[in-house]
Length: 386
Image 1: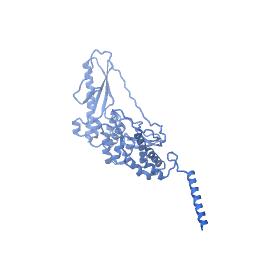
Image 2: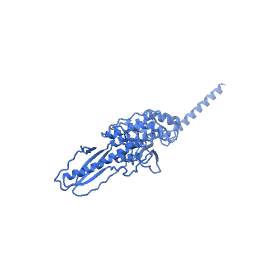
Image 3: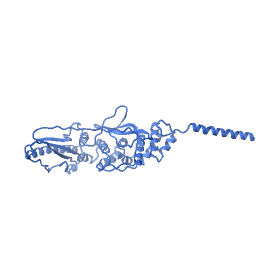
Image 4: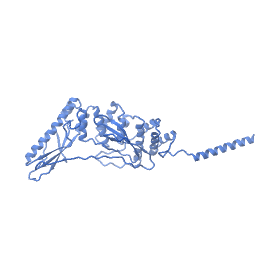
C-alpha cells in the first residue's frame, strides 16, 4: 500500500514537471504583436486595462479576429471619453502631453472597432467625441435617426469656438439634407463673400485659385498596433480602401478607412474643403433644388475690374457692383423664405444676410486721385482690414 502511494506521488510529480516544461515551451502568445492570436479572455483583459496602449491592442485584436462580442466593451470605453482641451481656431494649439496623445490614439482604435462592428453611440457621446475624432463621429452620427442627429449637429454647427473645421463642415452638410429652423439663416448670415476690386487705367485682369489636400502620416508609434483611421472626403477613394457614405445627395461626403500606424492621431483630411463661401453656396443650391453651377448667381470669391479716370467714376462703378451683389443676396433670401427655410422675421432682421468683404487692389499707373473706401448704407458691406 505504501509502495503504491509512493508510485502515485512520483507519477503526479512527474506529470506536474512535464506540464511545467510544456508551459515553458508553449507560453501564452505575446499580445503586442499584429500576428499574435490572443485568447478572448486575454483580449478582454487588454480592453479593461488602465494603459491606453493595452486598450489599443485589445481593440486591434477584436477587429482583426472579427469578434463582435467585444462591441459592448468597446462601446463602454467610448462612452467614458473625456474631450481633450481645445482652444479656438484663431489661437495656437497647445501641445498635448504624452498621456493625452496615447488616450487619443487608443480611442481611435476603439472607435474603429465600434464602426467595424456596426455599433452605435448615443448623441451625447458623439458630441463629446466630435472635437477630437470628427471623421469617426461623422460616421457614427450618420447611423442615428434625424431626431437624434439634429440637436448634436446644430450644437456643432453653431459652436462659436470649434476645435476644428472638419466638424463644422460635416455638420453643415448633414443638416442641409433636412434643414431645421434657423439653420439656413445661419448658413447665409455667417457667409463672407470676398470681393476684390481691381482698379486700373484700362481693362486688364485675371484671377485664380488653389487647393490643397492633406493625408495620413504612415509612421506608427513603436509598440502600438496599426488601426483603421478615417478621413472625410468629397469623393470615394480607390477600390483598395473602404469608403463609407456619410452624407448622400447632390454633394456627398465619404469617410475613407485606411489601416495605418497609430502615431499621435490627428484630424486628417484629403479632398475636403472647409466650409467656405463657395461650399455654403453649394449647400444652399442643394436646399433649393438648383443645379450646382452658379445656380444662385452668387460668386465666391467675387470681383470686378474698374477702369477709373476719376474718383467719381470709381465710386459710381463700385456702387453698381455692390448693388448687384446685394440684390443677388436678397433674391436667394427670398427663395429660401418661399421654401420655408428662412422666416420673414429672419430676413427682415438681417439674420440671413451674408457679408460682402471688399478688398481694394490699385493697379493704376495714374494715381493722381484717391480711391476712398466708401461706406454703404445698405446691406452688410465691409472692407478687409477694417
